[in-house]
Amino acid sequence: GEIKRQQAELVLAEQERKNADLSDYVESSELAKSRKQEAEFELSLLQVASRVADIHNNMGVVHELNRSYKQAQTSYRDALDVYYNTCKRFKNSDDPDVDRTMSNVKRMKKACASEEPRSALHGKATRIAKQTRSSDASRKKALTAAVITLQQALKWETESLGSTHPVAANTLIQMGKYYYEMREYDEAVSVIRQAIRNLQNALGKNHPQVCKAILLLASIYERHGLNVSPEGVDKDEALLEIYVDALDPLKTSLGEVHPEVGLVYTKIGYLYGKKRDLGLSLLAYKAALKAYGEPTSATLLGGMHPEVLSVWVRVTEHLHSMKNWGEVLVAGERALFFLRLAKKSLFREAELYTNHYSSASSTSDTASVNSISIVKTSKKSPIQITSGTYYSALYTTLSSLAQAHITLKNYQLARDACEESLQLGWEIALSSQPDDKSKGSNHEPLDPALHQLIRSLKRLGKVILLQKHYNDALECFLPCLELLRSSKTTESTLDTASVLGSLGFLYLKLKKFNESSNFLRECLRLYRKNGVDANDRETNKIKAWLEMAESREEDFEEPPTFLEIPIVI
Image 1 (cartoon, rainbow, N blue to C red):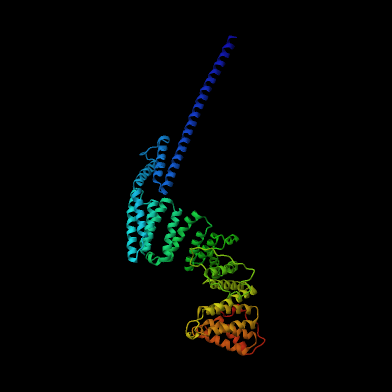
Image 2 (cartoon, rainbow, N blue to C red):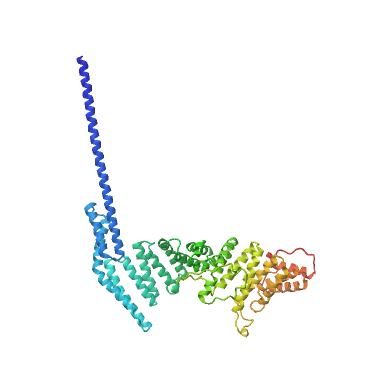
């Protein structure tokens, strides 16, 4: 019994020891957990405090940009108080946030002290620049004095705020405007470029102020680029680079869909077009349409932006040059739709609207087509269509549509477009001729409007021939030949030879062999005169047709299709 009792006591003692060890472990674990939670909480408080300091600093930046330097100084000091008292972060401890905030407090102290003299200098410069002068020399003298005054203000701003501060950048921009008025374009560009660099460093590349400064620089290059482009750099290349740089800040400020964004894209498209880089030009024009809200009916609400019409016409022209015929039809129909809608508004604005073209075609101004007002805007691109260029744009669009329909073998639609463009071509040619016919000479170059008319006649003649209406086709090619022979500069050209070949082919189809032979012989003579190879494919075709005509062979095989006839359209 004694042994059992001793064994039981030993078991109880061991159990008590284990319980004591477990209690000590639990207490130490809870203590460690508590300390960890306290550390995490303290870290969280420090993070919150740091964010509060950041907010005070950001408020200081806003006040500083608004030129409220006392309020900015207060905000920066509040940030310092949080760093010192809550975050336990102090100056001279390699803490960049604290050091920067301390520097901002000192800057704002200087800014407050210099605000009055700086404001006085800016006011003085403005008063000097506004003074009316009787001559250019005295005006330039006044502007020079204004620039000198701003340079003094800029010195104050550099010392108190820093050379890259937005306020100093704005002073540089104002100096650039005065230099521009004095026609010192190099100086204007130089100080504005410096201002742009300072604004980008201070505010970021996509800030609205950066965008505004870049567009100001672009306007100087638009007007006087030849005077300010760096040596070896083309004016258009420099201007293109500026507009591309302006895109991102402009879209960040205004959004992807905005007329200002559309205008910049339009100008980029125009500049690429001048370089004959039609692919990039087309991309820019399509981006411009997207920025204007196209292609949706929403673009018509409240009137149509004038650039939308112009861009669609230019897109059609580019697609025509690139021979994307399916897309030509889509873009051309949209351009034609807008041209017809905008006609009355364009001419009403210019007080030149007449009805002289209203009878040209039942499709050009039908009662079912409504007009639409054009949104008035002071900013325009080089391609913007006006009343003076309206008919040229309409003719170009119709011609592009006609050529696309011909290539895609939509002959009736092609004929409709050709007939409308031909009637318009006649009216343009007649209106371009001098009133005094005696002043003209057949030794003078053919008027461009007549060249345009000749192309219209040939294009319509081609469509009608493809429809196998040979007599009707003659009515196009005969006046075309007469116009070409009306000038010494065109009567012996390959263009004339192609028309002669077409007429010879037509008379051959009509079995008028003598007429066919005469036209074909004259065609071959002009080929030889213009140096066409005697074994050329086109020459051989003309020779074969001439042999048919001269042999009076009525049962000859069907000649090749008209697409192989030597005709330049």
